Length: 246
Image: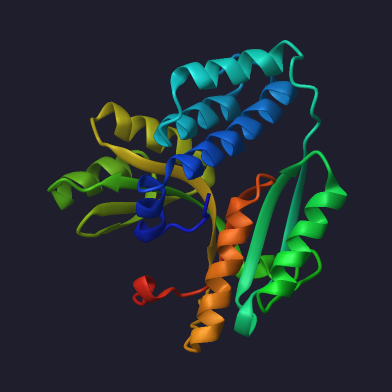
C-alpha cells in the first residue's frame, strides 16, 4: 500500500492482481484488528475504526470480510498482538524512505526491512533521520469524470480543504489530517467517487534518480517493502519518472 499521493500509485492499486489485492485485504485487516482491540468494535464511538472501514471499502474489501475481522477481534478470536513500528532510511542516491509496520515479531520485521535496504542500494537509518523531511497531510483522490472545476473547488472548501489540483483522470485534494473524515464523508454524500482518502506523509522536497541501476534498485526496494505483510505504508521522496512535475 504505497503512501504517495500520486495517481500512478492509485492506478497501480486499481490494476492490482488478485494476489496483490489479497495482500491489501490482509494489511487493512491487521489495522482494523488493532483498532478494535484498542477502541472497541462500534464505529459510531470509535472514529478511527470508522475511517478504516471507509478505507477498506475504498480498496474494494467486501463488507463480509470487514465484518468478519471486526467480530473476530472483538470476540478475542485474533490472538496476535501487533505492535506499531516505524523505520526510516535511505534508498539509492539518498532517497528518503519511511516504512510504517504492524508486526507480531519485531526481530523478524527488523531483519526483513534491513535486508531490503542493504540488498537494493540503501541503508536503514535511525529514528528521525528522514521524518523531518515529511509532513502529515490528509489526501483525498476523486475520480475526474468531467467534473466542473469551480463546483469541485466550492464543495471541497466547504469541508475545509486546504488545496486541490485538477488533473485529467483525478482531482487531488489536501487538507489538515483532523478534517479528513468530514471532507471524505461530505464529498461522498455529494456523489463524488472517492478513490482514496488517507493521512499521508508528504515530502517537502524530492530526489531525482537518473542512473538506470539506481532506478531499478529503488523500484525493487519499494516492491519488496510493499509485498511484506508487516509493512502497512511506504513513503518516499523519489520523484518518479511519471511524477516529473512534482
